[in-house]
Each structure stands twice: as C-alpha cells, then as structure tokens.
Length: 416
Ligand code: GUN
Ligand code: FE
Image (cartoon, rainbow, N blue to C red):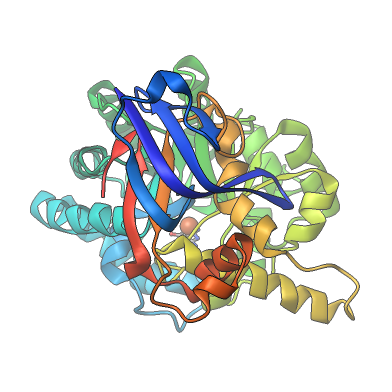
C-alpha cells in the first residue's frame, strides 16, 4: 500500500535542527517511509495524494513514561510529595484496577486521548493485575498505538490490598508474558522501584528479562527521601542505580524515569550502560521532586527521552510536556546565574520524538524505513500564519498547544 502526504514537512534529524521541506511529498510504502520529495517521483504519478495544503506535517510523539491506571486520577491529589502521594492517592487508585470492567472503560478513554493528542508510541506502567494489563495492551493496540506496557511488580511497601507476595508476582508475570500476543504493543519488565521490590524479586525479574530478551522500565533517584530510603533498604549498594545493576536490570534497553538527583557517578553509570533517562518535567514540579539537569545530561552524552508521567504529570499532551521541559530548563538556567544553557524548542521536540528512535530500532527524524509516524496540524486559525516561516509556525504550534489543531495522525496507517 502506498501513502503520499503533501504539505509542509518538518523532520528532527538532529538534536538542534529542524529540517524543513516546504510544499513537499512524504511517501510511504506499506506504512514505512520511502522518502521526502519536493517533486513527486514519476513512479508515483498515478497514486492518490492526500493533499494537506498549507498544513504542517511532523513526527508524532513518544511518551516514554506514564502510568495507565493513574489516568483515572489525572489532575487530582497533587498536594503531597512522592512517597506520601504514592501511599495516599496512587496505590489506592491502582488497587481498583483489579476490576476489569473499570479497566476497560478507563483504558479505552486513555487510548483515545493519546491518539487525539498525537502520541503514537508509549512505554507505560500498568497496575499489578495481569488481566487488566492485557486489557490495557489490547485497547492501545486497537487504537493503533505502538510500544511497551508492563505489568507492575511490587512485593513490599505497597498499600492495603496492593501488594503481591514474591511468588505471586513472579508467577503472575509469567502468566502475563505467555498471554502477550498483540500486533504493536509488547511487554516490558516493570519493577515499580527498589523500595517496592525485594532483592529476590529484582533478581528473578532480571533473569526473566535476559531469558526473554525484554526491555526494562523503572524509577530512579526521583526524590531525596526515596534515595535515603533505598540506602537503608539496600545497605550493600552504595548508590541507587546499583540496586538495579546488581540484578541485571541495567541494560541499553532500560528506561529509568526521573534521575532528578543522580550523582556524577550515577550519570556515568547510566551513560556507560546506555540506559535511557526519561525526563518528566511536569511530574517533577507537581510532586515537588526537584529539577533534573537535562542539559548537563545531554552534554555528557546521556540518552534522554521525555515522559508525561501521568498522573504525577498533569497532562497527556506532549506539546505541554515539551514546553514544561523548556521551562524547567530555564529555571536551571536562572539558578545557575544564566550559565547552564536552557533547552531550545528544537532540542525539547527532539526529546519527545527522535531521541527514542533507537529504543524502537529506528533512526532519528522522518528517515527512510522508519514507520510513517506523523501528525498533521492546521494552524490557519491563528493570526499571522502567512507572515511566518514554516519553522516559526511550527515552534508556535508547539507553544500554543492546540489539541484541536491536530487534524490527522498516522502510525503506519491513518489512526485519527
Ligand atoms: N515511583 C514509584 N512509583 C511511582 C509512580 O507511580 N509515579 C512516580 N512519579 N514515581 C514513582
Ligand atoms: Fe512514574
């Protein structure tokens, strides 16, 4: 099947540069990009062109860290810091996802909302419940989203009705993995974080990840009290990251959310292993975790991607999360007496799109052989559209965050 989209095409090939193709053709065969052409090659001359006129065509978003069940509590209970927030609000909400009917309803709404906002790829935490996790995977798959979902593992320090025994957690993980059979949604090993997982559980999860060649996601160095707690729980690990490394959960397909308080040596270990830091600026502000030093991480060569972390974060739209990332970095810029540079729009957009390409075995930007993974945006209702360059219009589209301006979304095929 051949898809040809015509419009103003933007591709984030490099971290600080948008490539702009005015009035051009984006051609895909069987859902994979063939190329971007100013003039349509002769061989496609009889094919149907979807002409989007003066609209903007750009890469769709990857949300590399969010919690599916927490969609139910979006925008509520954001008056506590991490550990109290988890115990007071989060664990009781997640515990309710034992109910498969509730799960179906919330996850259908979540999938629809992600697509409407141009998020086509996710790495998502579910709850501890296997059957509801399978419902989440099914709903995302049906909506045309790709990526990874993890059944959450936690065998200590959970809430009332929200903790597994080590044996249950492992047995249920195996039952879940045997049932994962979706087109575009795959499983990811998901120990919640060290305070919620015993050594034995982490050890066995590490073994499963290696044996089944699965990626891994967790949380790291998000909050200062959390870090102190890990020191007490794991006296044989000098730093937090070692609690994951010790059990072989520290690979180049590991995602670690937050890393707000990672030390120089923790960042060095992250870089060495090729672990991805998932920056979640909205969440870090809401539960008052602190300000991640993203510019420094990037300068050191650490791989950084972006996550909404709903419902620590308060919005699904990655436009909003991109702008949050820029604003947090400007806070760091100010606090460093204007020494540490802030993130540019180009950089922050790259973190929400191309930066995760290697995680999905792709190349940055709208590269040949990548999946046709794009958003079409109509900014004609804004003033001055005819006076601005394509690049200016695109940056404005990010800042204005108009969800309703998204007129179409493709992930291989048209999904919105
Ligand atoms: N650390 C452990 N669990 C969570 C969670 O659900 N959200 C956030 N932000 N941090 C966590
Ligand atoms: Fe999280």
